Amino acid sequence: MRARTFLSLRLPTVAINRRCGTLPAYTVAAIGASAVLLTACTSAPTAHADTEEVAHYRDTGYPISNARSLQTYRVVGPSSEMPWTASVTRPADSFRHPIIVYLPSLGQADDEPNHWVSAWARSDYAVIVIQPLLDDAQVWSTAEARSGDFESVAKARFQPDLMAERIARLSALLGQIRARSLRSEPGLENLDWSAVALAGADLGAYTVQTIATAPADRLAQLSWPVAPNAYLIISPYAARNAPPRERPGVAHSPVLMISSADDIDADGIITDTSLRRLAFDRLGEGDDYYFELASATHRWLGGAITPAAATEPARRPAAPPASTDRRGKQRGSGTAARDAVAPDSDEDDTLPDKNAHTPAARAEAEKARGRAMTKEALSEVSLNAVSTAFLDAYVRRQSAAHSWLGNAASKWLQNGDRLKHR
Image (tube, rainbow, N blue to C red):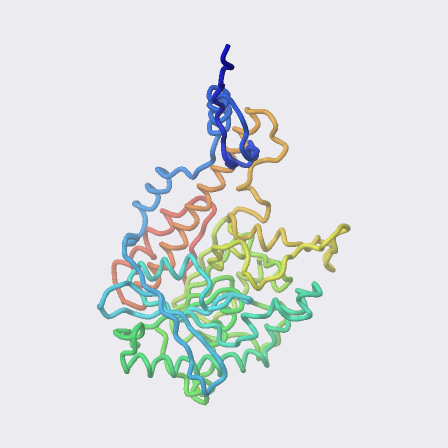
């Protein structure tokens, strides 16, 4: 009698999801058993933001265009000079656009993806991103940083004498970029240099603060090439015991400062969020705003999209026990990596609970993750709306934007968020 031949199904290695693991290569299985396994894995609860809630919140707030296509250009300095680069993100059209000069956080280069740069460009601005000093971008690759002394490395970059060098360098680079723009170089053409905002986050915010309140004669000595119509400062800086001569005066143009109740950085520069508000309180009387989110981490406020810059070292020791800083708090990669995930806290609330072993527990963990994702999306809408309305009001001088800031914004914002104007 002829032997029977059985047909078996060979499955390639496929990652179903991280809970189900990976099927072994060339697993021999019956079709029915495979279907059961796939059904069990794909039916696991999946977290997602409440898109209807987010859409409703966005639609009832300040009107912002999100459909505009963008182009990004890299501007490179001449080979005869010390190397420098800048990135320009702008709408993909031939119209004339107002300008935002954006100074990124410590350790970020000009070409790193950033939520707010993209959002402002979609709102019809040309955003020029510059990190004036190369060392500010490469700070985490230094020997001191690799040894784990992040606090000392970061604090050194905030020193007043280095700030003078940074502003002088920025002045020179802006002068070159403006001259090349007036010659209509590709990517720099059709920029409106009479409508400019200077914005920054973290170290960039401190730089913008210093420029915004610098004596006019000091800027004139640097041949300062632009006259900003507005200043946008994310995560402002203040030292509690700063001498009077280092304290700011009245800003040259209206200021919007943005922070949160959780705006503590990972490197020991600001460990008390009241210092963020102190930076605003120390401004002289002017047409200024302070926007505080109820919950958003420092890295998220800086617009970071990736968990950590490629050049930034991990904030976690190689082996236990973990080191502690002088405030007794554990230092590790957790803060830097988690900061990029969600605005509610430095805890990684967007990840499923690893201890949730039962289907019901996993479902509840995914619901919590979904709530955190929704909260993050709502906070992004809030920051985008308030910052864009401020820019439209003072750079474009649109009365509707000014009216929304003064009347509708506070009523529209989420519970716990607050917008102060003086």
